[in-house]
Length: 258
Image (cartoon, rainbow, N blue to C red):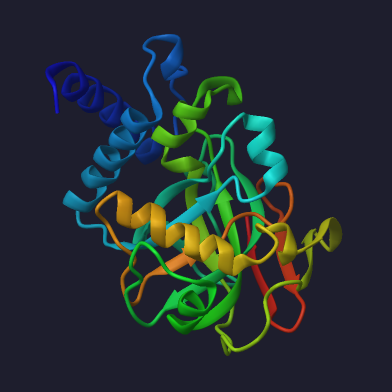
């Protein structure tokens, strides 16, 4: 790592770590310094490494931009990803304290629990064979930037906006997940209706991509890790006092109180 990159990574990873730890916003980084995607991932890795040194444990990976429309909208040709830790996990049916977030939003997803490592290049069948269980899930995404303004590289540096996750009941992975209907409700009212088909046409494609991207970063997917496959609908803003629930066809529901 050259001197410029080392300085950039140390500076911005510390600011992001502090923002995430305290729930306070920071100015958009790319208004101060331009950096590329590779440098953004270096900042993300360094920011998460600070958490691990404080005792957090790596639990998996989240995928982002898993719809073709979103990729086109953002002008990118590939998905983005972030790292999950145990401190980000929230209990199904429990209460999530929103005061630790800046601009919290929630989106419905499907989660994979791995029973064995996945190398970089796998087929859909090989990816499916590595899955121990599947579950409906809710991801709490957050941006640590002022006024919810950011660039692509800002988002990547900010752990691809991943801030929390709630996993529902684990189920048999033999179920076909290619087109499961789902409803995201807040306070009993449907806010988003969709299907897991919105995740790259099949959530297993997201798992294949996760294996490729994670291995390329020198952190191949491990047994026991959770992979969040990406948002199946648009995200909804969160406010204190809300009850959030996702019902997924054949897999039951996952929920939390804010």
